[in-house]
Length: 249
Ligand SMILES: C[S@@+](CC[C@H](N)C(=O)[O-])C[C@H]1O[C@@H](n2cnc3c(N)ncnc32)[C@H](O)[C@@H]1O
Image: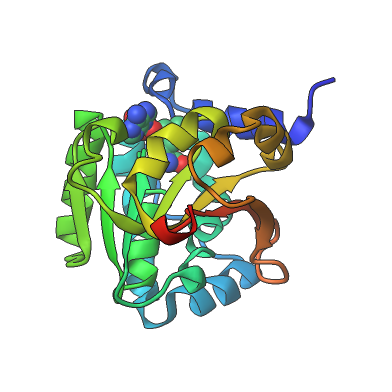
């Protein structure tokens, strides 16, 4: 039987895929649309997660809702839910990060979660890995416009940069199912590093389907956590998993 939540997640992944490029604009909702107003609840969450960098987050959302849609990175239907479903949903990982560490975000697309987190956590360095030229160009424009000094962009597939990227945390959202995602993300992790993978209710099913992949990749048992409970209308489901350090392998 199909899982409605999983169906919805797949729909989001599709909406942010290239197919969206060819989708006709919804009448009256063209790329000229400004960023949506925050609801009261979103405002509270955004203030807590972005603090004094909320204006930067608003600029990012404006980019997503205008040039991001023009460039086909997201679909116009995402505009009303840009804060809740996308930016806040990603920014809830911010408090989980440690100052002075490096985070690699695999398959950043429109910067989710990488850019949302780089805005929320200027004390953490981010490496955004994205193979598609058009997306990297857009990311580069936004990083420059927002003057983010803690972001490095790499145009490549994650598998191509295992020799140059080593991060304490690797993030990913809507890239692929865990079984395929582990071989893409684990080689970028430092010893004792941690995967923080934004998933939906399909998380436990994906963990089961990944079977022995976790131990094969020298990972500890994964946990499924809800982040942003009480803060977001819909908390984010995150699969957290630590790489065992060399001494403990
Ligand atoms: C559906 S989009 C999701 C984008 C973004 N993470 C989000 O949640 O909106 C998947 C992204 O993963 C990228 N991608 C696919 N395979 C990849 C790989 N092997 N290494 C890095 N990125 C990859 C695609 O180019 C695309 O931008």
